[in-house]
Length: 250
Ligand code: FPP
Image 1 (cartoon, rainbow, N blue to C red):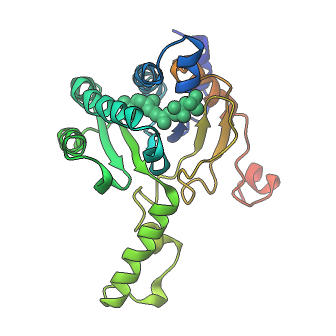
Image 2 (image 1 turned 90 degrees about the vertical axis):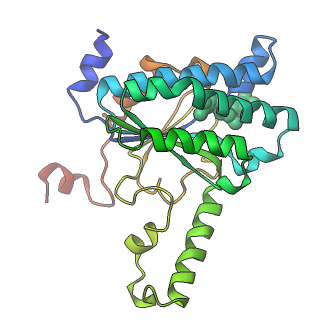
């Protein structure tokens, strides 16, 4: 067994890790391959990362698979990615079942084509009782869209007298977001040496630790995940309190 895995298992494991999987295109270009080859190898890295997460006890992984802005990419790449998502749903379902991984798609799913939507829904339904790990796939996702959509739905409930405006607080508003309010990411990892959030989980990342690595996403693997967790374990999460309050638990 990896000594790094042994080491991190003695510390606090982040419950929820969010991942911006960047660098597929550059990785492919380095190898004189088309961009879609980078995305295909990116799917392999997702599987490897999930295995690494299961081995150390991470309970939730949220991956940024396709942003709302990604719809503006060349049609050939968008079509290739949609095809890849459909194929990954088919190929990975047995693996998800075997490993007891639940799957959930989050985003503006109404923009997806019928085949892609049906594939995602099939995997979501088939895995809904699995409880080893929750894999959330952000697809056709944009955080500003998510927040605006939440505000719109909440306003509708106010107008229809389902909720009272005076009861609106962060907890209530959070219930209109696409992720569980009690399950914000502890750690965000972005690959490829870019230092941006790119419209990903802006509400949910309020207190997450951020970790950036130069590694291109297709090269990301278990060890890279564990290295990020080891770095996370050195951080002191204060949530606005003082360091002294944290160490003395007051
Ligand atoms: C960003 O790299 C990556 C994407 C836009 C797509 C991510 C998709 C995958 C990793 C495919 C596998 C996912 C699943 C759920 C099966 P980029 O294309 O922006 O890379 P670049 O910045 O080097 O051009």
